[in-house]
Amino acid sequence: MTHRSETPTPPAGPVRTCTGCRGRAPRSDLVRLVLDAAAQRVVVDQDRTAPGRGAWLHPSRECLDLALRRRSIGRALRAAGPVELSAVGEWFDQRQPPPAPDAPEVVTTSSTKKAGWKPMGTR
Image (cartoon, rainbow, N blue to C red; front, side, top):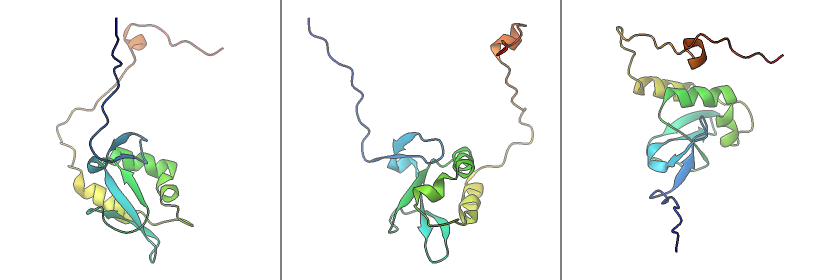
């Protein structure tokens, strides 16, 4: 009996890693950030053709916030010191739709609390 291994098919085109969530995605799904060395600030490379090293992010504010919290953008670009990220934040803010005023707030509770159980302690 012959078994065929189920190997996933590789995505078409180059794959990059998001510096925010560390997820891998095709290059076409991510946003490229580059360092403007003269001004020591990071800008969005919309054409993906600027020279130099690039950092990649999913086009979501959550991934940008994760990257800012981890300080991973400067490391990915191998910047010598602190970099200015205000232009990147503005670009992401322009791309995000404002929240709907009538949208209900999402409340998540664990299944143990729903069942009435107490969470298990560590002691």
